[in-house]
Image (cartoon, rainbow, N blue to C red):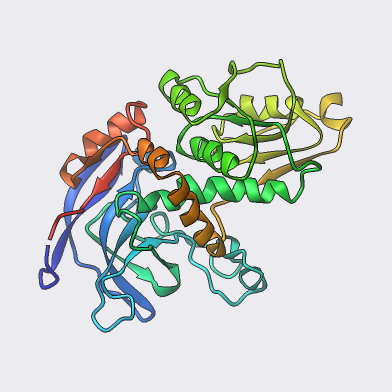
Length: 333
């Protein structure tokens, strides 16, 4: 597609596990925004909610693309898209926690159009320039897979009573596997992983993790990073976390979670954290994680396909047939 065309292809999440590829007008950037030509958008498990229920906006939130704004300093630059809109001026933003802005509560790909399309508009402060040595196909991993997982570990470290924690990761999806790689980079010598999917458990083992049975009570841990969103895994974490330990909830689950205040819950000091995404200031460190583990992160991108194939590829992803497939426009003009 070239810029003097007026339409683009986009994915319409209709609900009831249906996606239709439709023609949409080329979006026009408002003041303070740029037009981005999408290079790649990684599929994410959180989009299953939109697949089931339907979406008011174009979905897709793990986005990398090229700025298409003649005269703009970043014109032609490959950028990752930081999905939380943020004011940059509230006390939360000024202390660096841009992912938790209290003035603006809106996410690209959820509350405004995202990256399952050839183009989208992006606020200028949501552009994260990607260094030239990072492949466009891998750039989306800098967001959820690397950014979310590394942020969870950095936050946990502020509360841990030891610099050499024993670590359990529950759920070896892309973020859980990202936690395994980030933990190794942060110097955690041994990480246990509980994952029922044999293929994903095998990759965690390739990455240096020790695989433990799901639901095992054989060991207790200083740090448990819960990436599955499964309530049973959250309940188990409360039992397995050591005194002065930390549980980090990363996985999502929209169903209510009830915690029983039994003696296991009451009779120890521990921290229960919820982390979301990552601060923008972490991006440079996330790039370094990708550089240091490029081949391992590339192992997660197990499929790349054009937008016409998205309906079937998303269904395959929902069945667990792929780990981190990407909708790719790389090479299109």
